[in-house]
Amino acid sequence: MKFLCALLAVVMLTACAFGACAEAETVAFADAVVEQAIREALGVSANAPLTADDLAKVVSFDCMSEDVATLADIAMCVNLESFILRYENNPRVFSLRPFENLTRLQFFRIDGNVLNTAPVAALPELNTMQIGGRATTLDLSPLAGRTNLDSFYLTRRALDGNTDFSPLTSHTNLRKATLPKLREGELRPLLESWPNLQYLNVWGGPVTTDDLAGLATRTLKVLVLNPDEPIDDFSPLAGQKELFRVQTGTLTETGLKSLVESVPGLRKLFFYAGDIADFTPLLSLEKLEMVYTSGGRLLTLRETLKDTDVAVNDPSKF
View 1 (cartoon, one colour):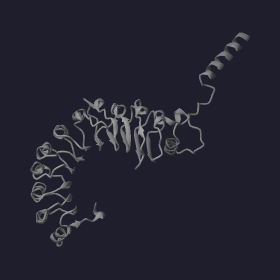
View 2 (spheres, rainbow, N blue to C red; view 1 turned 30 degrees about the vertical axis):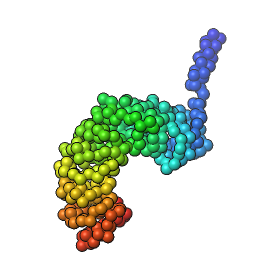
View 3 (cartoon, rainbow, N blue to C red; view 1 turned 90 degrees about the vertical axis):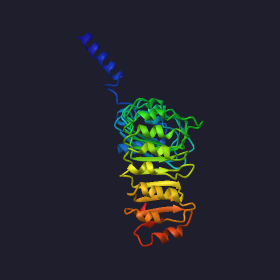
View 4 (tube, helix red, strand yellow; view 1 turned 180 degrees about the vertical axis):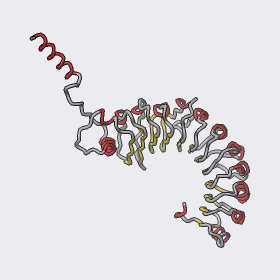
């Protein structure tokens, strides 16, 4: 009997040692701002203890703050599906290593600078990748051979300028793409690889008529271009029946005429007018709702469209 009681005591002590009799350990946070956002996601007070099991319930993280110092705490949110960190000015360069085991993450957005994109690019369920700042090392190689991306947003090349976009060519389901200033020959292979593309934004570089030919069979809806040189021939867009919004840099009179002829269903147009004196081609756009322009002869544009319902430079119509 004494032996049995002693044995039971040993079993109970062993179980307690492994946490069966003790309360789950409270986690400690490395960043107060991230902690606050996690608590808000869980709906718990600032003083309530949190355990690893609690953090495993966090599926969405959304924080708008310039005061985040580290993302280390994100690693504890093992079931995270969506991550958003928004801010306007934070000079820190964040490590994305805390994300490397978050295999359920689908949506990733950070508005600032990161060390290396690879830990996020490697996540198997990732369908949206948005980086608003600059990456010290822009490694997209983990994306190669996969097809899961729906949206890709990148406004700057790597810090050293070396960026290989070829891993994106396998993502045939991509619908939205925002690309940084590209180099000659980089754009068309991407466009030819994305048959389902609906939104395209290119922040600069040598965008040519030949590049636009890569869009010939797409069902594009929004096109935003900032080419180094004006495009005079938009004829490759002639098959874009659903394209309703175009934003481009400087347009010449030849380019304006070509754009209007190629995209008759245009509803919204943003451009720099440059030396355009004749805006009458716009009168043929029966669905045109608004035009926003800078430079050039704005008064001439207003006069041309004065008898239409087209809004000119009206921010409320954006």
